Every structure is written in structure tokens, then in C-alpha cells.
Length: 577
Image (cartoon, rainbow, N blue to C red):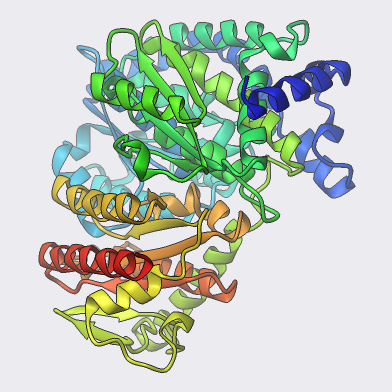
């Protein structure tokens, strides 16, 4: 038995003695916090515990709606949402595909103009159902997507355009009022006692899945089965959700706070959903668990002792190389958890297991896993920058610290401040600039790559090469979050979690831009304001952050950047040796 095993065993025994599971199901907010302001939030955030049975009771109505829109001739459905409103639909879209005769599901969760245009090219607008999905009803990205596509539909359908739209939002929001005003085809209510990242099994996840022909009844019944397995009368040590949460929390407290999730091919997007749930729930008050997803499993020399691995696979999908390397990592002391799904519909179980686990980990880490106190910071900066654009007709980009191979390096705030890592000496090359930045990393640090680019296969390959050079060369955990999507996922952890992150934003000029009807700015301007806003939010906290701007030649810029990183890593290793 390892030391971590002993600690986990002791904690599980303590939770049993403290009636943790019973108190969780009784919705006792004191499991997490004693302050009244926190307890109010927590008490109104635990509706996900019983949502599977509530959704099953309402399922006939949802399925009747699906038959209605199929009969009306709709062939596509597009989710216009971010974070908790988009991630579960995307998991279902990729995992299950579209059943014959149902609506082909698309998910738009990027303000990058090429992403918006790409969705439009894939659909037949008049025969598309648009799902405007926002718990708060005021998400700027969702509303911008709505304005764009409502105008497209209105051009062909006039005042009847509303029949192509559905709202999924909490009761009483401005989006609900807008839906009634414009005569949307339907409003599906959210539950006010379920936060966005815990909403997968509610209307936010199940309405899009049902439209694509996913057997949502089976998903919900599997989730209900996991709820029974995690029920109050199951001891913590035998409870799938509680035991996973205890392991994650105790591993993090022991310094293994990099949760590396390895997925089999058939369910790989589930990692994106886990990333948001864990990062946004635990990353606050200077603590947190950093999810690392979509990373090829390396050999044992690629990792420091700050990792815990979870291997999730559908039976029969295990890759030999990944499995073999995980066995080697386990043999040298890295904790490895293995979860095998009988089939893809077992994801219903896993949505619920991970929600229980994350709530449990939050309690043990002493934080409130149901709030997101730092998310507003970037929104405030973005709002201010858009205000400057309205007043001046341009965003305050500032002057780059240096330019190498047409890649601009911004090491301070957009207002022109300098980055501390570079001191008073201007770097002589791109590699030297990257090396100076990466040299700030310490054991236990992580590098967050934050590209505001269209996630094409070419871009993904370049970013993956970038991250593997850093991981394998410097033994640092790396994450990738495409902007602005990550702002609704890992953004909370970046600002509120452990002060171990180094942040690399990658921006580029848009070859084509798209206007947002009713706004003085375009999608390209909104995207850039979001990037600059997060840059400012990170710098204002004193975190190491750099922005590389690739200009109009994105592919060439990524090649140059990858070359800079390769040389920088080699130089840092040479100094250390």
C-alpha cells in the first residue's frame, strides 16, 4: 500500500464516521462552507442530485417536441452556447453522431469568425433549428450568435423567423423574455438550483441530444443507476463518486494536482466536459485540481511527481501503447485510476459520478465548488475594451516588445507595460524570448496554451507539437484551451487556483470577418477583445503571461513559434545540464 492509499483509506473512514454521504444527499451546505454568503449559493446549487429522475418524468414532452420539429422539416440543429451550455451537447454530438432521420447536431462555441462561418457553411439556414442556450440569459457569445443567425433566418422568413429558434435558459431571464417577444418555437427551462457545469443531465444537455436521436432515456437511466450506487446508504469506500473525489482531493493535497485524463477514442470529448467541471469547481482560493486532457501518454521521463492519471475507456477500445505506458507509470509510483464503460451509454453514469466526485473533492479542499468568483474579471476587462472600441474605433493593442519572423511578442499589458521576465534587455531572437518566459517555471508549474484560432487539424497539430516539446523537454504539465471557450472552462482556475501557471495567448488576424447585427463591432473584434481582456486579467494578478500575435499568416506563424519553442527548450535544458 502506498502512502496515498493509506491517506485515502483514512479519509474514507473519517467521511463515513461524519456521515458525509448522508449529509450530501440532505444538501447540507456546511460540508463545504460555514459563511452565510457561501451557504446561500451552495443550498441553491444541488439540484443535479435528483435531475435524472426529474428529466425522466418530463421525457415524453421532450420526445414529442423532437417529433414535432422532425415533422416540420428541420434537418440541422445548432447549439449557440458556451461552457456548461455547449460541452455536454458536444460530447453527445461526437460520441453518438446523428441517428437516421434526426437533426444533425452542430455546436458553436467560438467567436472566431472562421468558426461562425464554418457552421453556416455546414447547414441549410431556413431548415435549421437554433438552440440559444444560456443559463443566465445574458452570455455575450450566445447572444451574438443569436443576433447573427436570427438576421440570416429573417432574410428568408421575415417575422416568422422566431419559429427556427429555441431558448434553453433559467426562468425569468432576459433571454426567456426575448424568446416570448420574438415568438420562439419553444422555451425549455433550466433549473435555478443547478449550476451550468452541473447541468449535463438537464435540458441543457438532453434537449440537443434528443434532437440528434440520442437515446436520452437510456442515458438518464444509466445516470439514475449511478445515483443509486452513490446513495446515502452506500459507505464512502464503496461509493464510486465519493471514493473518486477523495482520491483526487488527497492526491492534490499531496502535490499531485495535475489530473491527467486519458480517454479512449470513442469518448474522447468527455474529457472536455470533465475539464470544465473540475477546473471551474476546484480552482479558487489559491487551490485547485488542474485537468490535463488530450495529451498523448508519454514515457516515465516526461512526468514529475505531480500527476494522477484517470484512464477511461469503452470496453474493447483500449489502445495498447497508452495502456502499456500507464502500467509503467503506475509501476514507478504514479496513481492510475481505471474506469471501463460497458458501452458509450455508460457516459450517463459518468456524468453523475464525476459530479459527485467533484463536489466531494471541493469539500475536502475547503472550497465552494459551486461558485466562480474570478470569471467576471475577464468579462469586465472585455466590456471595457469594447467600450474603448465604440469610442475610438479600435482596440488598444499596445506596442509589441519585439517582432521576430513576423511574430509579435507582447510581454506586458496592452497598454504597453513590460514583462518582468525580460527585464531591461530586449531579447535577440524569438527563441530567446520564449526561453526567458519558460525559464520562470518551477517544479509543479504548468503551461497553459491559449490559442484564439480556429481549431483546424493543422492548427491542432502545431499546438500539440508545441505542448509535447515543453512537456517532454521540461517535464511540465501543459494544457490547451481554445479561446474564448476556455474562459468558460479553465479560466476560473487560471485566476483563482494555484499560482503555478504560465500563460501563453496566441492570436492572429482574421482573413475574413463577420458583422454582429446591432453591434458596432464584429466577431473578430469581440474575439480580440476577449483575448486582450484575459491578458489584462492575468497580468493584473501578477501571473506570468505572454501573447504571441501571428498576423495574417497563421500557419507560417505557428511554424515559427514551434521552432522558437524547440530552440528555447533545448537552451533551457543546456543551462540546467
